[in-house]
Image (cartoon, rainbow, N blue to C red; front, side, top):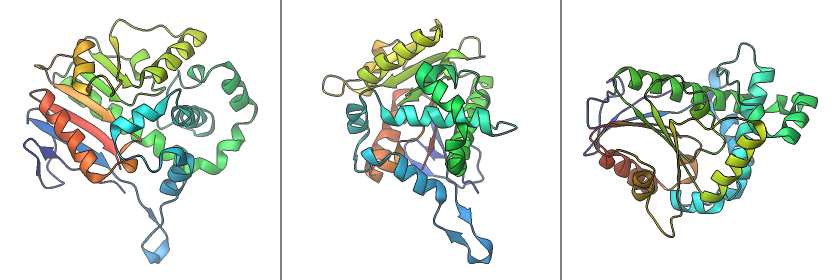
Length: 263
């Protein structure tokens, strides 16, 4: 089951049934998924167990800055991409169709997956969770675009493929990540012959030298226009104050903003 809420700027929690809108200064949409077992109510979430096991190398990270510093050519990003690709092969109909999910893996990883897709079968709950969160984020993005948003920021983009299949005329996409991870992704794109569209801006962030706001400004982000943000697969590893600090930063950068994240 899911939960949706909104936080305004200055931060104020509103009732969950109040639909967020980019017409308010900042809206924050969040999703949470639980598992049920018969009459025993909520039990330990298999998605969370898989999540923790899959990303154990960053389990103790305390800040967004530290996550991006530790990223390098990210093993986490590659695992996420493998699950998205496995979803295309194993789940029918696909909740989140992505024609680039397999190509962006690279030749060797793609061949391994095609040869043995069943090795991901026991991760079906986690795979479904990742597909659902991506679908939810892009559905909300579509809603924002219909209301006039023309800037989309992907925080911790990894091997996300939206920018390369972007169907929205006039929507600029900003991928934020560690410089090493972005270079690794560029190499993957070149190998897969996936063209970088003119609507995409890379925003590498080295937190030793610059802030997120500075990196976005250098990439051409317009602080005077509304923006939509996605922030997937990060908040479970952050302290609550770090999450709130990041949300305040997002809310304060533009007149209107919407952010989708999982937790």
